[in-house]
Every structure is written in C-alpha cells, then in structure tokens.
Amino acid sequence: MAITVNIFYSGVNGNARKFAEEMVASGVVSDIRAEDGNMRYEYFFPMDDKETVLLIDSWKDQHSIDVHHASPMMEKITELREKYDLHMRVERYVSDETGIPAADRAFVKK
Image (cartoon, rainbow, N blue to C red; front, side, top):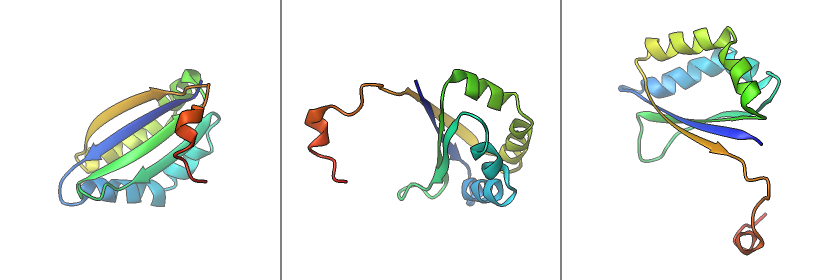
C-alpha cells in the first residue's frame, strides 16, 4: 500500500520556488530519493499560481514515512521552510491496489 503526500508550499516573492531550488541544489532531494521506501520526490509549479510549489512525495508504506520523518533531513527541510517563510497545505492518498479500472483505461493514452 503506497502512500502519496501532496504538499503545496506557498510563500511570497518567489520564495516557494527558491525553496525547491535550494532543496535540489543542496542535495537534500537526492538524499531523500535514496532513502529506503521512497518512490517519488518531485516538485511541480502550478501554471496559475506563481507563489506555490507542489511536492509529490510517495512512499512504500507508513513505516518508510516514519523513518524519513525521524531522519536528520527533516531538520534541514524545516530550516529551509522557515528561511523562506512558507506555509503548507497537505493532501494524503493511499494507493488503490486494484489499479486503473478498465472503463477508465480507455481514456489513458500511453
């Protein structure tokens, strides 16, 4: 049962984008992606909101998330969030192990 967490980081004056750029440049993103259980850690930029960055963060299971939250990287992430004065909105999703229904697959082009 994979768990995906969508985190919307919002700030002012481009700070959310600066945060994401520093996360990548500092190597924190690479380190997180290398953690056991991490399946995806990727930033996206909404076209209609220049002050928000979306992080899609997927993990194998809750245990993997708990280990990540207890890691030293969380201190660095928290420091950067504070540095850029970001606010967060979080959505959490649990995977549907049955996959995409046949009726929906008709609309997916591969």
